Image 1 (cartoon, rainbow, N blue to C red):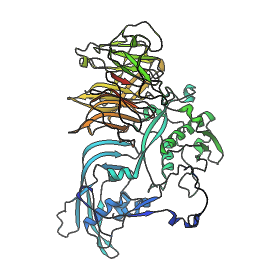
Image 2: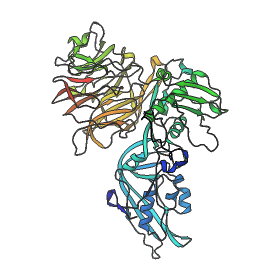
Image 3: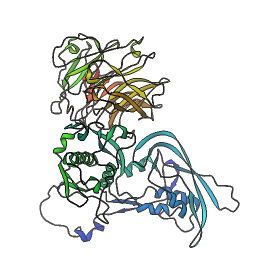
Image 4: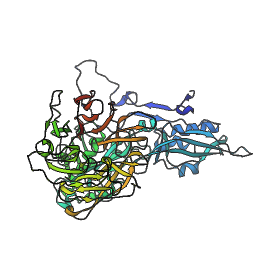
Amino acid sequence: MGTERGRGGRWRVPRTTVLLGCAGLLLTGCASMPDSGDVEAVEASPRGDSQVRVYGMAPRKGAQPNEIVEGFLEAMTGDDPQFATARKYLTKKASKAWDPTQVTVLDDGPVPQDQRANDREGGAYTYALTGKKVAEVNEQRSYQPVSSSYHETLHLTRQDGRDGKEWRIDGLPQGLVLGESDFERIYRSVNKYYFASGTLSERTGAAHPWLVADPVYVRKRMDPQTQMDQVTQTVEALLSGPTNWLKPVVGSSFPTGTALKLEEGAKSLAFDDRNALKVPLNDKASNVGQKRCREMAAQLLFTLRDLTSYRIGQVELQRSDGSTLCVLGGDQAEDFAPERASGSPDYQYFLDTKQRLVRMVGSTENIGDDEEAEPVPGPLGSGEWRLSAVAVARKERHAAGVSQDARALYVASVVSEGEPREPAVTSSGKGEKDRLSAPSWDGRGDLWVADRDPRQPRLLRLAGGAGEAKEVKVVDGLDGARIEALKVSADGVRIALLVTEDGRTTLKLGRIERRGPEDDAEVSVTDLRPIAPQMEEVTAVSWAGRSRLVVVGRESGGVQQLRYLQTDGSTSDAQSVPGANQVTTVASADDDRLPLLAHSLEDGIVRLPPGANWKTVASKGSSPVYPG
């Protein structure tokens, strides 16, 4: 085999790909194929492992330093158990110290540059590894976007081998170093699910606790370290608990220390022919009650649904002795669905040319091209107040509107002709852009809004959408930047913020922490982290599911684009979003069967049904929203 030219202009040592299909399974039935009979559809089961394996090539005898470096970088992308091939490029001491658990992701892969040490005996080499770092994945499998340069070194020495002295790596950075394309080929994102703090049944007696998505990355094929397939990797990740960022606001119904108890020699779980999964647990979970066990099973079911595109029949949790702890079917799990608070919205909303709140039918069965928007009942639709921005509560019984001059926030019914009320919040900002932002409702019924007055910037929350607005403290991460816009998740534990500093608006995600009694909780937003550092400017954002956002922005020197992002900052595997002209606002529903909505300066209110192109709904209008 020869070498091939890789990305970044470097030469790559070829790897060997092994396809395990019928050729490797002749004794189990592939050798005998029927030659008659009808073709029948077969429902696929969610098997956890691809049958494709990629193996690197071991160093050849007498390999030169550049071959050792290239071979090692290539072997890191392989599937060898315990990274056996990659370790052959290392000294024994370096192999023992190297931990490939963490991953550094570079946009175009690591580029080695010869920086030979001044060694008169020719016994050492140093290679610089450079590139642009775009992300890191830690030992919890948590993805963190990064935008920085990467510079590490590989140190080589000559060591005694069976056939004389051979070059080997004795100094290297910890973890895997992968190009973005290799990372996307090897890993996939999956949501683990945990309960929002204070909603577990044993604490509150709540019949329907809140499930919150916690995205992590698992290997698509067998994990070289554990030999687990992706289903088992995901279950193990769920049992290990939430990632550090989400941990302060969620909890697990699995008792601390709960782990898989696989049969001796077994490495993976397996679905049966009914798409049911048995999950054997250690003795930490053997004595939990039925209600708590059902919550544990719900966490598993929703996690597995995000991992596969197949319908999960049921999950059976087993005690350490193999007896059944509890069983939860797919239909029964709907009681725990994260979006159950609002379900699929009845309407889509926007402001018409008279600055009134109007609505269109939003059902997935009734989306056509000829609907006409009608004003909502009540003062927000009557024209009593001329509005500049609006948000509708998730149960679609109330809405909040910001006045045309952004000075006042009003809350009113959208199902009855209630009397106009006094403003719920007012701002003293000198200009419209220094006053109130567009509001947002969470699934708990709380209403959020930002006062952008530079003399007294505030993040405010109205518990239940009524009463006195209380200031929410923003700690750790705002660093003097001003909140321009906000969107709160349905579960009420995460908030997406557009913040401006030095003339640049970026996107950050914050964690909502509540302390004290529910009716008088002290609420704060903490640990803000950048979600789209690669974007020079972000102009609009909306939640688009349990752990996904749709973002309007542009990269440095680029044009405006619409993009889906995961809440950890990784690029969603959803289809790319066609561009619309000069979008100022975007809105998405938790139900991905419903179209995106947007306001275009050129085309007015437009919407994008799944698999179609943008269509104009109203040539004039503004502030399109779904409930939330």
